[in-house]
Length: 260
Image (cartoon, rainbow, N blue to C red; front, side, top):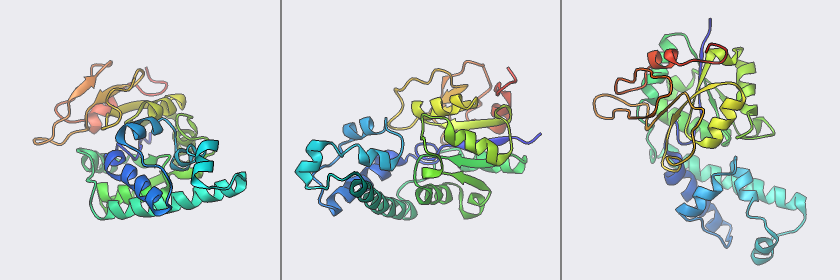
C-alpha cells in the first residue's frame, strides 16, 4: 500500500502571507501606481478569496476602475491582472530566495520521515507554481524539494475551497483518499481537502488561528521540532499521541478516507 502526504503551501510550509504575499502585493500596487494598499486587516478579508489572480481581480469594481483610469474591456482587464500577478510573483519569489521566510517548525523533519518510509509527497496550492517551488525549496532544501509533485496555480479551473486541486493530486499520484493525509492551515483549505474525502491535519498560521476547523482530524499550532519548538494541540477529536511534535506515527493513527 502506497501512502501520500500532501501539503498546502502558504501558511503550511512557511508562514508566508503576512511577511511575503502581503508586502509583495503592496509593492506591486506601488509599482503600477495603483491607488490601493492593503492593511493586515484588509488582507485577512482578501484571503477569503482563493488564488492570487482572483484576489487582484477583486479590485476591479467600477469605482476602482474609474479612479485608477483602467480599461473597462474584460479582456484588457484580464491581461492587466495577469501582468500585475506576474510582477507580484517575481517580487514574492525574490523575498523567498532572500531567506525572509523560514520553513515552519517540523516541515523538513516530517518530509524526511515520510520519504524514508516510502510515502509519496506533494504540494497542492492555489498560489503560482513559481512561488510554490521557491517556498518548497527554501523550507525543505533543494534536494528534498525534488521528491515532490507540485500542483499549483491555474492547474485546475476552480480553486480552494473547491476540492479540484486535491482530486487532481490524488489522480496524478495514483492513490485513493483513504491512503493520503493533507496538511492545511485555513478553513478554505480544510473544506477543499474534506471535499475530496481527505483526512486533514491543520497547522494554524498567523491569519487563520480563529477560523472554524470543524472536520479536521487534528489541529495544532505547528508540526513541531523538539526540543526548542514543540507542537501544541488545539483540537484532537481522535485522541492521537502528539509527543511534542506531529510525527509519521501520529499520522498513521488518524482515521483516513474509508478506514474509520
